[in-house]
Structure formats: structure tokens, C-alpha cells
Length: 610
Image (cartoon, rainbow, N blue to C red; front, side, top):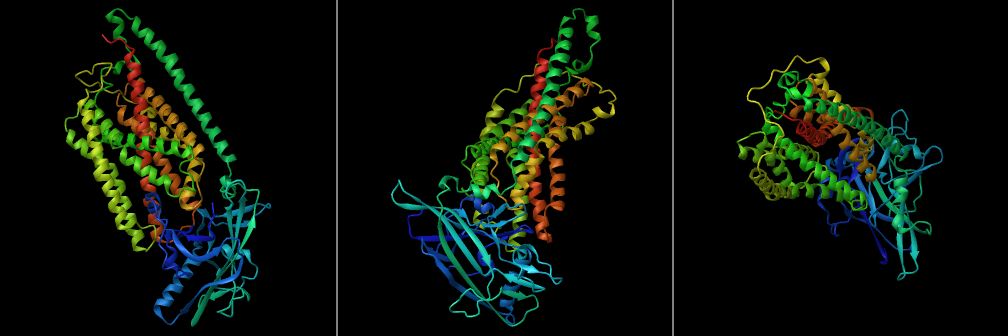
């Protein structure tokens, strides 16, 4: 609520859809406020490169102002430093960089009409725009028909700010801001000291030399709006986001897949297994038992430890950690703790949870490694604590170096990098060790059937029971459930749209877990019937293959949806995509393995083995 008379306007970093590199407000040499201190930021904001700073735009509540001067910037193209600043500004306009301003924790939005009479509210507005040599208006230049000078940059040096508020009667007298809207304009402002917001639009010819002045001005007015409640003041921004009816369609589509799979699994469980088990348990004489068939033939080999059991157990430990982290984060987001108004909360929550969940990771890895008959427990603990986090951190570090070299605001300050390393080494690693200690102390997992001394021959497999086709098929179904949500999530990361559909995301998460488990169980059963008992790695890779489809989709998204230009931006896009794919691989693989593990334990525990 705004009882104070002064209204603070904060400026966030500028970003662009055509480049992944965000820059701080001060990088563009706009009017800035030197004296004020910056508001504090949480870990999530720093990780996402948000940099919120105070701005020189100051106004009093309910005191309209017209054409107030903020400052004038003068550039002389003969001075190298001025020329560099001006070139950077031009580059910013060419790539359509957007301002993000904040009043009372609300984004200042620029609303304009789009086709079929709807309004679109963009939580940012451009620095300026460019008209090409052919006279084609790019990006925001289409809003004004006067922008027709060829090969010129138009600078939005004036803003009309409209603050919507409503008066709260029943509490102590005060007013609450419910919306802040902005109209960027371009004025020549010929007389500098006493601007009148007159003259044509302010443009800068691309080849211009000499002295160039940019006067920055603003107007502000206040509108009382009784219709918007303070609690629902974000709605008008979210309404102009991609529509939710696609969401329901995709959820229905996923549910159909889930029902189909559940039907198949239930049928196998009831019909086949029930019949098989009854028939198997009735055999009394040893002669009949010679004619064993299908999955029962491999009962003496099904719990044989897998090759590379160390790596598998480490992956499963990290996967468990990611799974619990995702579940808890989404659960909190559904309850509304991590709304877009609470900046950076989602990322902060995820990182803190991940650090605290070292114990289950260590426990699961140690317990499975022990049941695989492993001896080198020290190596196991160290790998669980360092392998997957280390890969992610190394990738992140390289990306950070690129951002830092480009002078972007998304580059993490050295202090934050040290803080993240400290969280990892001082909290996560010791917790992993504690988990592993308890995992190794407990007795190994009891298997329902004994493992034979001599491994069985695996018969010649037909094409579709070979490992690779099964693994490739297994990833398709889970991916089909999530790919529409994936589009919205990628949009929110790369096209700077807000993501707020956590309810949908939670549903999709549950559907993904069920689909992964069921697809893996089905394929696992077919392979056991074909007398191939190497199910451990295969179950992990079957559902983990979803991550490969995710990668393919991310590449398609890059080429079809994004207009990203420049080498650094491209490297960053793929670097961050790799991190996401790795996390997703561990996450889905773990679900597949545990589903299959449960299934195998279940079916062999009901068979009498003499």
C-alpha cells in the first residue's frame, strides 16, 4: 500500500528476445541515480541476472506532471568513448532491448492493441527502434506512422506514465497502486532547458557524425480505478499471456495416454501374471518344472548385479535428489508461495532444497550400491557428492565466463559463485556423507529369489526386444505428455514471458511420473518374457531417453521460434539447455528404474522357487 507521498520507480536489467545477454540499466548510459542504494536481492534473482536499481524518475502521489526533464545526454562522435556509448545504444535498439521498470513491485507495462481488438500488455518497453535502408519499420517502429526516415534509429526518449490506484476507505486513509502503464514516445525537444515535448520524433541517422543530444523527459498522471482489487492487480498482465485452453487440451491428451498405459499394465498384471503364477505354483512333479517358460526361466538371474553398478547407483542417488526437489518446489509453487510477484523465489527455493537433500541422495546411492554387491564404498560416496553436481557447475561456470566476457548483467558476481560453492561443499557434501553412512549400515536389500552361480545364456533376440529399439520407444510416451508445457516453460525462460501456471505444471509432473513408470514396466515385462534379464540399466535408459527428445525439441525451438543472433548467445542457449537435459535425464531415469525394480520384486516374490 502506498501511504507515502513519494513514489519510487526502480529499473531492472534490460533484455532482448534476439539475444540471451541481459545488460544492466547503467550499461546503456541512460539517466541514472548515483546516490541511492540498491534494494537487496535474493539468490534466485542473482542467478537469473536480475539487477534492480533506483532510477531518477521521481514523482509525488496524485501530483500530475507534464514533460519533466530528467537529464540530457550529449555525444560527440569524434570522441572514442562517446562513439562507443552511442554504438552500444544503437546495438540495443537494433536488437530490440526492452526496459523493465518496477513501481511498488509491479512491472510497468506497455499496453497496445493487437489484431481482433484485443489489448496486449507487455511488461517491458523498447529503448527505441530501427527503420531499415529500404524504409521497413522494425519492431516497435510500426506503432507510429511518422517513423519513416530511412536507415535511422528512433529513440523513445519520453515516457507517459499512468498510475492507476484505488482509495481504501475502510482502513486508515490511503491509496493502493493497482497498475502502472507506460506509453513510450519520441520527441525532438528543441529547447533543452525548458522542454515542451514538441517537435517531431527524435532520430539518429545511422551514419551521423558530430554532436548528438538526447533529452530524456517524462509525464505522469494518476487515474482512480475502482474496478481492480489490490489482490488481483497482476491479472491484467497474465491475461495477455498465452491462453489456457491449449493447456486443458494438452492435459486431456496426456491423460488419454496415461489411461491407455494403465490399462495395458493392469491387463498384464492381472491376466498374464495371474494365470502364469497359478499354473506355475500347481506343478508338483519335477518333470513338469522342466518345461518352464517366459519370465520364470530367468528367476535365478534377474537380481544379478548390473555391469557398471557404481555409476548406476550414483545416477540414482542424484536422480532421487532432483525428484524430491522438483516435487517440493512445485508443491510450494502450487500453494502460491512462489508467485511472479515474489521475484527470484522459485530459483532460490530450488537451490536451497537441492542443497538440503544431500542425505537422501547419499542414502539411495549407498543402499543400491551395497545391494549390487559393491565394495568400494568411499568412491561411491565421493562420486555421489561430486559427479553430477560437478558437471552442472562446470557447465554453469563456463557459461558465466562467456557472460562475464560480454559484460552482461547475468554474469554472477564472484561473491555469489563462492557462496554457491560454499553451499555445495559445506552443506550438501557433508549431508551426502551422512546419508551414505546410514545407507551402508543398513543390511542390503533382500531379494525374493536366489541368484544362480552361473549366468544363463540369453537367447537370440528379435528386433523389437533388442535394447536400443525399446529404449528409443520408451521415451516417446512421456515426452508426448509434456511437450506442450515445455513450450510455455521455454518461452518463459528465453522469450521473457512470465510463467504462472504451476497448477498445470504439477498435474503434468504427476502424469509424467506415471507415464515413465508404466512405459518402463511394460517394456521390462516384454524383455523378461524374451528371457533377457539385464533390466537395471535398460529401465533407467528407457525413461531417461525422454531427455534426448527434450534436447531435440529444444534445438527445434531454437531454430523455429527464437531470433537469437550472435555466437555468444547461441553458445549460452545450448549450454543452459545441456544442463536442463542432464537434470531431466537423471530425473526420468530414476523414476523408470524404481518402477521396474518394484515390478520385478513384486512378480518374483509370488513365485515358489524350489
